[in-house]
Image 1: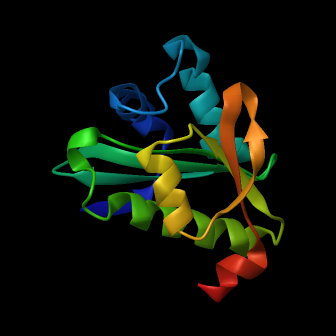
Image 2 (image 1 turned 180 degrees about the vertical axis):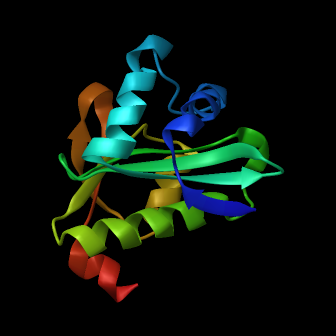
Length: 145
């Protein structure tokens, strides 16, 4: 397993990962374009990928502009190997090295993702669009981990 910064050249594989998920599925795959991905990893924030045998199997992207976790996804066949937890750690360590502002994310209720974020110490902060659970992580809470 190799964890590294996401690059523009990874966007095709990032999109493949995003479209293979079984939960938090995009209602319209055209909603997240390659240009969006490029903007988020080069201008708005930063991204990371996990590669196994030269193939991107997971990725995470954080948005400094909106203080938001934009994405954290794995190919289903690579779940339960610690990849998501490592990507999460890299992303939040970097985020909180850039700012002390609380970061938030939204995820569908009743999913493995919701359980994952709770286990990582995220706090419920209401709901966001389409009834997603809104979670927040403060600088102080992250530094306690």
